[in-house]
Length: 394
Picture 1: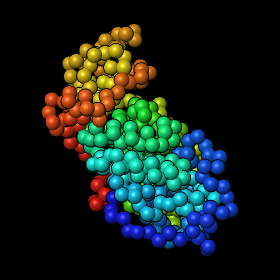
Picture 2: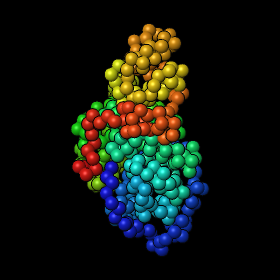
Picture 3: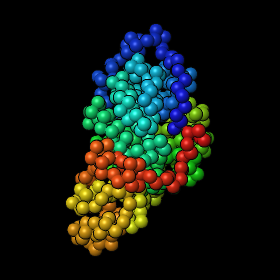
Picture 4: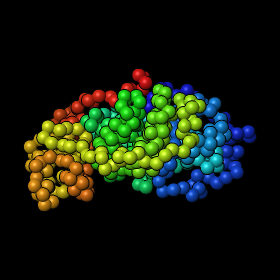
C-alpha cells in the first residue's frame, strides 16, 4: 500500500454535519453489538477518504451496502503522524449506517512508541479493529516490532482485535519479523496482501503459496485482494470463490478509489460455491532443513525452545537446530530426519513457543555485533524478491 504524504481531506458529512449530526440517529460504536471477529465478511480499503465517492460519507455508506461491503478499512496514520481524515465523527456516522470501521496504519519501525500511540488513538476514536501495515521498511527491525507490539497492547489491551497486513509470501522476506507481529501478544489475525494480478500468478497459485507459508503462524487468514491494476472480472470472482474453498470467511479489497464500476458490480454479485480440488488440504506446509534461513526458522526455533530444546534462535537452520529437530521428532514417536515438514510442523505448533524479547536490554547485550542488536542473525538477509512492487512503482 502506498505511503505518500497526506493530502488533507475534506470529508463530507451528511447535511447538518459535524460530530453531533454524525452521531445522531443511532448508537455509538461502543454500544453496537459487534461480532467477536470484525474481519469476517467483505471489506474495502480506503486510502484517501476525499478520493472515495467524493469524500461523501453518505455515498460511501450507500455504495458499501449496495455492494455487500460490511467493513471499511480507513487509513488512520502514517508512521508517527496521525491522519486528520480518521475522526470520531467519521467513525460514529459510519457506525450509524451499520458499517464496521477499521483503522489501518502504515508503520516503519523508526519510532515504534509513537506508532503505537497512533494506533491506540484510532482505537480510542471508536474503531472496531486495527490493522498494522508493515512492509519493506520493517525488514530486519525485530526490536522495533517487539517494542511496538508491547506498547500497543499496553494501551489498547490484549483482546482488542488487531491484524497484520504485509507481503503474502513469507518465504520471500526472511528478515521481516512476522513471528513478532503474529506471535503471542501480537496481532490476532493475518490479512496478507494477495495481489495475484500484480504478482503475476493465477489466483489459485497465489492462494496456495500464501496459505502454505502463512498457516504456521496460526492466525486467522482473511486475504486482501486487488481491484487496482485492472484485474479481469472473472479473476475477481475466482478470488472470492477461492476464499470459500479455503474457508477463510471473508475477503477485502484494495482499494475504494481504484475500483471501477464494472468491478463494483462484480463484487456485489453472488458467486458460486467452492472450487473443486482447491483448499487447505492441498496446500501443504513450508519445508525447513539444514541451510534454511529466515523468519520461518526463527518461528520453528522458538517452538523448539518451548519444547525444551536448547537451540539458539538465530534464524539459521544449522547442525544444532537439526539435532534439536531430531530429538523432538523422536520424542513424538517417529523417526527423526532433522527436517521440518508437515508432520513435524503440526507437532511443533502444539507447543507454546518460548519467544525472544528482542526489545529487551538483555537481548541487545547478548548480540555479538552492534548491527545485530535486538534481532536474530537472519534479520540482515535481503528479500529474495518483492512479489509486490514498492508503493512508488505500483
